Length: 111
Image (cartoon, rainbow, N blue to C red):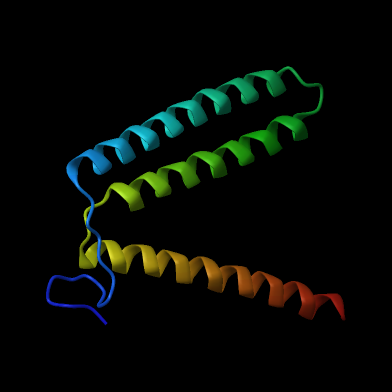
């Protein structure tokens, strides 16, 4: 349930300007170091003999950078109905997708 200010009832976000700036700096630093690390690990594995090594590292780095990006977006986006709707829908979609994959695997194993 949400109040007239689009905030869930019973939950308060009372961050001052300094906390928001610090949060932005931490997320920017994390994303920058994550990107630098991703580039480094992709370059190191690109010299690998096996293409599967490089592919798996690229997939990992895409996941890493996506996670860091969503974390920054969630934590730095101002509180609003759009924020709550978008991130809750994305979380539910992720849980449903995970459940369906698990259900499909367990159903198909027996056949």
